[in-house]
Length: 263
Image (tube, rainbow, N blue to C red; front, side, top):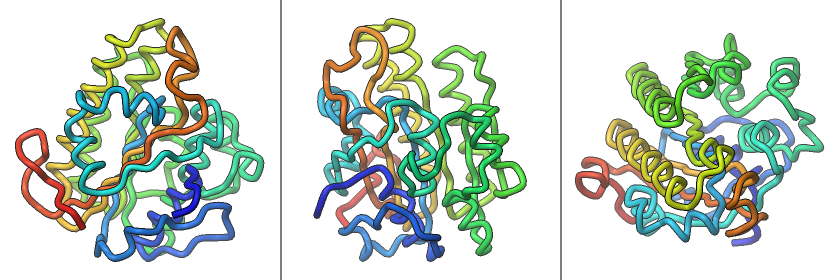
């Protein structure tokens, strides 16, 4: 397996969904094509750098379970901030080719994302993120659910979980959810203990989502960029993020038991 970049996430998801892609920079990730998945859940964990993940993995049983029984990759980060990084994750384009550096630019851009490619082909899609970001998807996907930015760190990610479970009730074949706890804590000057607590909360939320998704679903967890603010900036790494791919084959979440089995 060659070097993996965040732009490889969108074409990997498109392959699972059977959706065609326009010309893009990313390539499908090898090693998952035989898993037989028909649905995808993508959880973007803001500031989950690869080095940070490895440091915290003993406190993250759900993510660690997926990594142990699926794939754990160090994906090359393509942007230092959230909006262009997520644009690359969802479009498969490098920042210089999508030109999206702000939410306003995202709303005005004619470049479409994986969610929209899938929807155009009749694949039900849902996105759950901060309100302003979610609005950029309205009219292009079946469900664009927003969470108010002004909530506390814990309440914001809890609401992302709640809206994600709500979205799953509509039976989408692709769901994208964006958790911000680690990033928000880092920006507030939190140290490793506070970041660990935020990461553990996100791990619990991912476990709850995993318990709710249908069988034969692919779970993808990825960071958007390493920590880029506060006292932990540059401590673990500055060039790669964690990228985890696992297959949901039935059972309950790892929080209660083991939801993932080797593909």
